[in-house]
Length: 81
Image 1 (tube, rainbow, N blue to C red):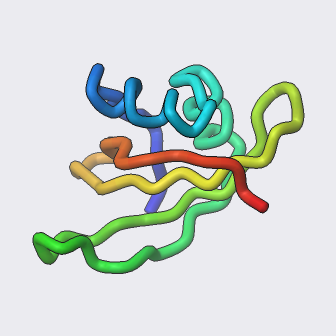
Image 2: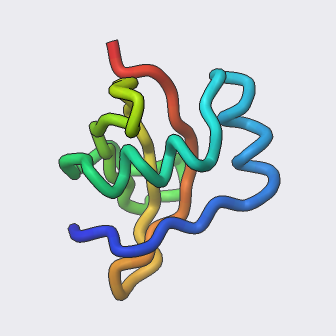
């Protein structure tokens, strides 16, 4: 899957803030990251994991759900240890 645009809702922005991640960092990591198939969600939908770095070099793991045509919706993001 190629991600050209990521949709970050207000609720998801608040959620990733609890992990100390900003929406800008999510976008940076997704832009530079590598995409892997993730687990199926509880609702049965496909998810993907993006592992990438921010401009500052922080490594993030970003979980997204595809929406189609290169668009993905943010589920969560956290430090990639």
